[in-house]
Length: 289
Image 1 (cartoon, rainbow, N blue to C red):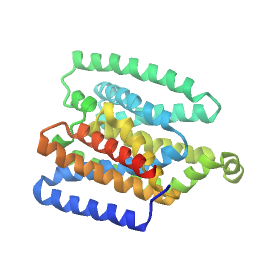
Image 2 (cartoon, rainbow, N blue to C red; image 1 turned 120 degrees about the vertical axis):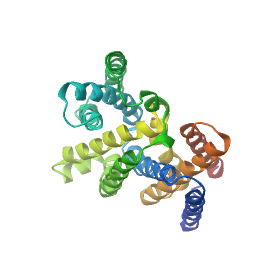
Image 3 (cartoon, rainbow, N blue to C red; image 1 turned 90 degrees about the vertical axis):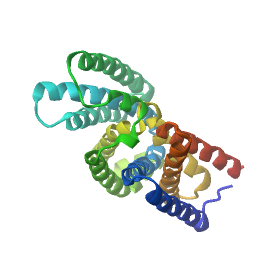
């Protein structure tokens, strides 16, 4: 039985606001900003990923982002233009669009995933080893693996805020198209003559968000947080619009509760958020039954 309603969303909103205010007055603002912005990122992307059944791409995105970051450092050291982040975004966009469009052209998703995971995993090890053995880098590669949101600088928070704003706006604009593509792709193909452009836009924002999220939530948990909010929301929502709203609210709640829990128990923040999200999933399954 689906239980989502205005009362449920009002309750989730009230809890999120209460947690936000509590955290605002008790913890550094940078921490609250990072956890709120990252929650918005995976909260708005997750429903589109679920609607289009692109969980394989959500699983693969962290692998490609890790490769993109390592290769971005290497490219910056040789090109000496832009910075590591810009190069990482460029590489990530190319990789995610490549696998996405290959699947659109008819390549089996499992085959495309296997090939690109092999490429990105092997490339990540090679590029990371080369970078660590040749250069002194400021980019913390351990943070990319485990997530390090509490040590974010103000510049990183500003970058995160800019990316989050762009992703939220574009995801909202593309959401209905993504839902229709997931439910009746043949009809969408007949209706839209520039379907590839919508695909490219979605793959691009997913790639940019994935590269940014890797710094804050880490390689290990990123694909979980990109997939789980929509899965939870689908258990308690009755429409695509409610799924988006519930996904964002659940992401905000799990993120801020995870932050408070991590500080109180002195545990890894990314892991805390992951466990809270898992707990919410278990509750949603129990309530639905």
